[in-house]
Image 1 (cartoon, one colour):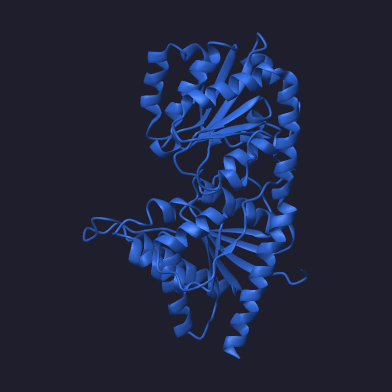
Image 2 (cartoon, rainbow, N blue to C red):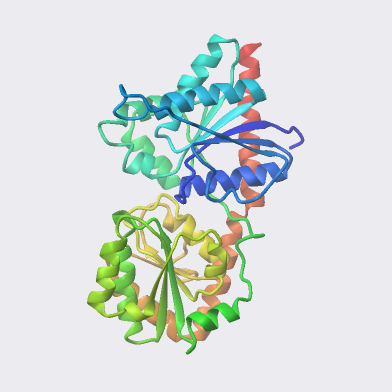
Length: 384
């Protein structure tokens, strides 16, 4: 693709999957010469580099006695209109349907009244459809926003199908998988770190998430408890969230505190994955499983629940194991078997990396670029 675009990226700035994907995609597009304009209420967590092609436009709200809740959506729409007009953007790409897709429709309508037509692409990431989006308070707006977008993508076939089942969608949804940047996520030598964490050569098990109930981090700890009874191990819990206090109490109850480290939120998660022998993701719902893919890129096999988009990433018995949600016993048994057999572990490591390469950013990025160009050209044709 030779045409360089000016792209507005609207996303949450947090450590959640949608914000991570949006930021990494924007960075990759900027490296290819596109101008990327992030629009969010603060700097995205993964936006830690400087690039001449990356711009950040922060949304600010005002305090006024009339408002019990700050009208963020109105401020966001105004900022989107401002950036599109001032920077002459070619396309708006909004990540996570709530509220970004609806706000984008508002911004597009305002711009149209000023003679500016801009295509909007909405990327669905998961809980905006499967959890929050289907709530009666949001469902009509989510459905309308999806149908009103110029283009819609989903990060897995599972999410696409679930969207079509739950909502009255009268348009096509394009599946573009999440991706991995192998310049960042790769196996690197961190033996000095590993020695500090596992001085007796213990196996290192890792989990990363936002510690919500849906992630079932308590299952991670219960699996680890069973594994540690057979194989000396350490558990690294990366992230933070509402369940942390409960999880810390569970560690005390199971008497595994000395072997579990709560590391909090980490920017350089790839350096911790480089230490791991196994990654656990027993979630109740995962529309794709980006955390699992990041681990696989670092040559770490994965044990997960067999829900959502995870079976589209993990091949059971080759680069990991898939079991029913809540089946702690089976997941623990797989972990014990894998960590007890070095030859099997090495084979799974190689298979994990090979599978991760199917999601290399160099394979996924052109799919977005082609879709952008298609929508921009269609928009020009409508104007003409």
